[in-house]
Length: 368
Image (cartoon, rainbow, N blue to C red):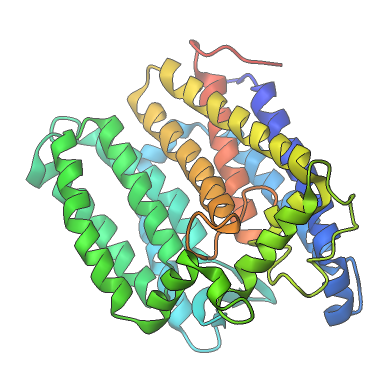
């Protein structure tokens, strides 16, 4: 079956990728030259992953999304098993005290990014298959929480609290859209808050991170250094920025300038205008996704769209919130813009699935 292409959605993604290429080079050139003797080191790898992601986007754009119903379970199981690979010696890689990466043939892969997408597919299929039991607290709601709990158990060992939070919110949103009673969801949050509080205070570094979040200026040369440098980048950017490539925070002041904190470099070099343009692009992407979800008749497709658009939207929100000090610091890439193969590839595959669903829906207007 030949499908239409949602031109607006695809155009927004292409523009975000183009911004990402420019900003990855701008924010990493000096660091890449100092460490690898080539200012193009991260740029070339980013372009490579965009090409790989493009192949994934094209494949899944033409892959009938309804076939996910048959492979959702094994796909999700494989992704959960891949999470455990990070604990295998010489295979798992530790960065910044977190063991979240698997290194294969010189490439680093983050299994948690794979899990996020397969979790969405699994939840969409499970809710669709058990529509008659979704309102039941035992057969419906609790059974899904057990699945989420298994994922959280593995992620908390790594540790990866950003992914835990994202998956938890995604799961609850999809369950709500699927018909779970609001009372069950409120009960979930009432139980979760004490557990989260105990988890935070049980480890000194987590409590310290919260203290830094509340007042980063208390230790500006230590634990609060990264977020303080991010604030300086935003403050010095002004309305129009210092100019592309003219930022100073990337000159070994702001750690992770080309990955988690690339939004701060955008603010410094392109100013409020640049930041606003990025926000508008993400806003268009999210609006287009929810427009699709509201108009599609297929329940399975609707759940997939809601999960994917919330995955991308929440990832962007969490990254921007961390960079601007609205959330505690955690490793979370800015979709389509931050340097990083795993996140970029999964985001592009997710867009491919959205384009597939949009193209097969008769009730959704396509923008060419």
